[in-house]
Length: 155
Image (cartoon, rainbow, N blue to C red; front, side):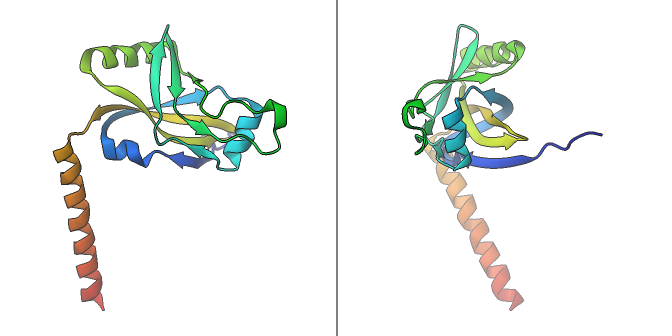
């Protein structure tokens, strides 16, 4: 019998969708310590200013803040330490080539539980210009006005 993997979202990086066009998404495992996992289960994580680097064929996430576990005492780690992501070597080489040639960047988009394991959704992203951000805001406002108008007509 096959077990169905449950996916429970922990944290989203809303700023990444505001600042970047996400071209492709990849799933990666993350190397954590026990107190960090306990802190993540409590929802004490922030992806807002995080990014990914590739060094020596390994991929690392930087700037991800995992608050210290309050009952962890001496076992707590630095909240902003660099954490290694776990991906296949072929995927890492493919991402490295895209970053080098096309001027793209890797940004963690979401942190979630897949079964009992913590996973990171990493996006291969292109930066947005200011006028792209304005266009997105205008479309969002227009859609909100349309929804509001439709709701008033239904009454």
